[in-house]
Structure formats: C-alpha cells, structure tokens
Image (cartoon, rainbow, N blue to C red; front, side, top):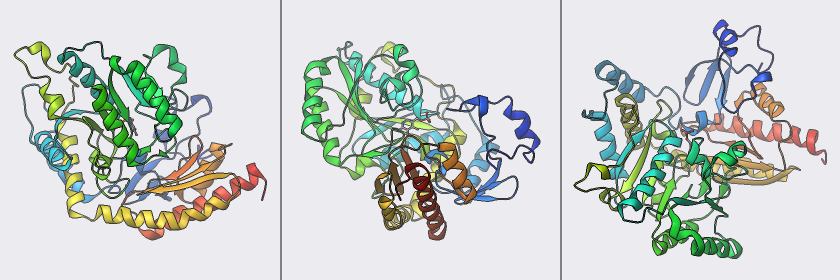
Length: 435
Ligand SMILES: *Cc1c(COP(=O)(O)O)cnc(C)c1O
C-alpha cells in the first residue's frame, strides 16, 4: 500500500502529492505516503480503515499517545480565548505558567525559559546565548563550539555546524557552515586524551560545549554514561566554557528514571534545550532554559545588552497551553512507571534479536529500543514490510528502533517487537544470507 495505493488514495493526497515537498525525501520517486486520518493512544488509523501500531511517536513527540482528552480540552479552551498574542509587550497566562513550571521541574537554577517553535531554533538560541554571554563577560572572541561525533542538533545553519559532519545528514553544506570542533565523546583513554588536546588548544576561543546527554538520537542512538557528562562539566568549568545539554530527544522521561537526563545524571548544564515531547506531540514549541548565571550576565543599564533574538510566535499561548496540559499528565498519570515497564519488556523481547546474522548490537534505555545492523540495504523494503505487518517503524542509518508512546499497552508493544524480529529475520535471510 505504501507504494501502490495511488488508485485508492484520497483526492487531497493525489493532488497534494504534486505540490508538497517532503523532508529528507527524494521527490522524483517518492512513494505515496500513507493517508493518516485519525489516531488514538498508540494507534494511527489510515484512510482505508487500517490501523498501525506506532513505534516512532511521530518523531518522538507523542509521549502520551494521540488525542489525549486532557490536552485536547486544554487546547480547545485556549483557542476560544486567546490562541496567540505577541510576547513583546503582552503576557499570556500559559507561557508564564509554563516558564514557572519548567523552572520548578528542572534541577539546579535552570530558571529562565526562552520560547521558540522548533528544536533547531532552540539550539540556535542556546548557541547565540552562549556567544552573547561571553560578549557580556568581556570575551567576545569566544565564539566557537565543541560538539561530538554521532551528535545531531537540528537542520538550521549553526545547529548543523555542531552535528556530526558525516552522520549529521548535512554533508552537502560543509563549505557553507562555520567550523566547529567536533570530537569523539570522551569515554575511553584515547578519546579523553583527544578531547583534552582540543580543549588545551581551542577552548580559549570557544563559547560552549554542546551534547545530547546519555543518548545521541538522530546520529544513530549511541549511548554513553553519566561519567562522561561529569567530565564535560569539569572541563567546561576549568576552561570557562558554558555547558549545553540538548535534551530535545531525551527530555520528558524517554530514558526513564526521571524527566530529564540533567536530573538523572546529577550533572546540571548552564543551558538546556527542550522540544519534541514538550507539548506531548500536539503543537510546535521549544524552550531554551538558562541558569541564573547565564541570565544575570545579560542584565545591565543598556538595552544593547539585551539578548538579541525574538521569534514572532515566541510563547504562543496555544502551544504553551498544550505543554502545560502535557506536564499535568506527567503528574496525574504514571508515565515514569510506564517507561520502566516498557524498558523491561523491550529488554526481554528485543534481546534475542541480537542472535540474528547481520545484527551488530541491541540496546535499550527507558522507552527506547535500538537494533543496530551492519547496513540496512533496502530501507523502502523494510518500511513496507513493517507496514504490511501493522507496525509503524522507520529505520534509518544503520538502526531499526522503537520509541513508542508511553501509554502503549503491552500487547501492542509485543506486536511491535514481534514484527521487528520477524522482519529483521527476513532481512537477514535476504541481505545477509548466512542463516
Ligand atoms: C529533533 C532534534 C533537534 C531538532 O529539532 P527540530 O524540531 O526538528 O528542529 C535538535 N536536537 C535534537 C537532539 C533532536 O532530537
């Protein structure tokens, strides 16, 4: 159906397919996407009535599942009152409440939220904040960044510059991007030595270190432990750098144990970026949250020292109402318990996949299960086999992964892991041929 559904496809899809330009998609032979018409919990319903169990949570956003009535009601009530009002000169209750709640939820004195509409922009904001922070401190030459191989921080210019230059999907733009210091995550002797050498040579021109803490997401779900983060914290302090945690993927409980890695790891950054699950997968919204130290550096008698950034839709009331409703659900429903149960089930059900030829590694953390293979070979074949089996699973790079909504019921999760095992077995026979 993914490729051959053109005849049954609804008119809006056939017409629009000529006019839409899809993300990261070769449009010459782009398969007709599946028409999604509704969704509930962990299931997405297609125009022809079929249901798929969602293993992706719509790019890792829909942590409470789809159409949770509490978020729906909050958004409905807000749209009738005040969907949006400019944040320059006007305050709206949802944005101010959200800033207060995030400050209370986050560890340390991460107390000051700057709102934008996408993860990439939240990263740009964090980077500009770090650069201007050093200007405020009288060291305006500190304007480069240290980031890590395997990292992904978004698709806009400076966000691209701190991604892995090979795996960050931005190779075409190498000559357009500012040069940063992208090094291996310092977790063993060789990488720690290399990291220290870069610090010794370049730290004095750098504003900050930026990392996705504990799990690097879109670069291939590589994992490191909390000791690495403490090492970065110590290095940042020793060299006068800010430390930025990009928790756009890891935030809001995805890795289990607590809502944020900066809490779970005991390492508090100077700036944190949040987006993806911030509104429970309903509205675009992102936050860049700074500590008192960073915020206070911008205070002065001169308007020129204000932080120079201002998205039109900053603090959008509708999106912030959705985010507040999402935070309510983390309080009123047992999300972290659900993540722990998902972790146990993924561990039990995915581990045997490691025995299939061509599988390199199986790793699980919280509600994230990753099967790494030698190479995917034919991604479209894999995607359509998953769909035929009733599962929405989107492999990329060298990984096939599950990031289900936290509310998924155990039977649906078993459907996902069974389909994964079946299709990876078929893939192995077809492309590895050693069984
Ligand atoms: C998705 C992601 C981004 C970019 O967010 P967009 O909303 O797609 O711009 C940045 N950092 C991390 C860690 C992400 O997972």
